[in-house]
Amino acid sequence: MLVHIVMFQFKEENKEVNLIRVKEMLESLPAKIDTLKNMEVGIDISRSERSFDLVLTSIFDDQAGLDIYVPHPAHQEVVSVIKEVTVLSKVVDYLK
View 1 (cartoon, rainbow, N blue to C red):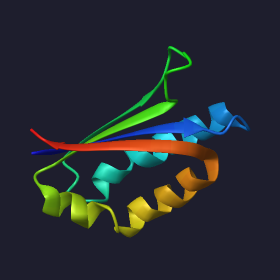
View 2 (view 1 turned 180 degrees about the vertical axis):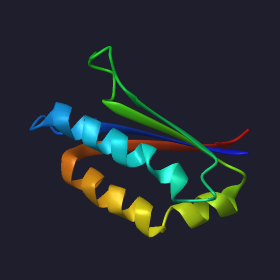
View 3 (view 1 turned 180 degrees about the horizontal axis):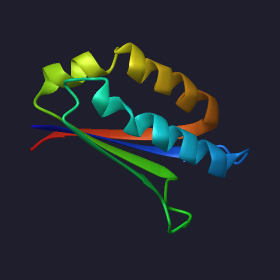
View 4 (view 1 turned 135 degrees about the vertical axis):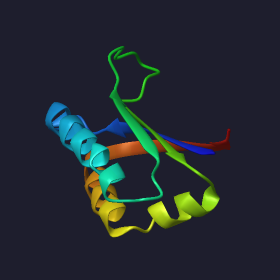
């Protein structure tokens, strides 16, 4: 099993609206992409200097599943929105 975690820091402009929009868009992906086995999306509640605004945890059977997910048109649609509303992202992929 491959776990794909991405954390995002959002721009301040329209932050709350954009957080909800991106969360909903991401949560729609498992129904559209077969290789995406499970997904959790969380909005940060701590609001500390160290925290990111949103975290995405996705589960795939293997690297091949992630490789199908990344260029998938439904995922790329979300990516284009994320690029407009965020200033920073960090990713960790690991095998479980």
